[in-house]
Image (cartoon, rainbow, N blue to C red):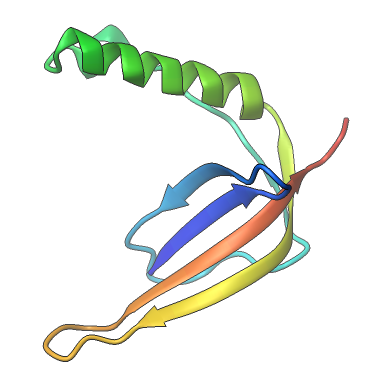
Length: 101
């Protein structure tokens, strides 16, 4: 199961995605405190310089928008993809709002 979190609004923005979840610990109305870890040079040293810069930019944007913020789940969408020769895939989308401090 994959769970996607989006900041609700006209310019919907992805917050994060959780992969390979075995259960769904969230429901509409839940409030979730966010924290964003910074990227360390040792974590990206094996990548080329252009890709490293993209990682740093993405990390900085996440920190700026979501570090030490709180979100509330407003609504959810559940989707299942059926496969003939493989296990089905379940995806859940949560559309959230930032809780103003």
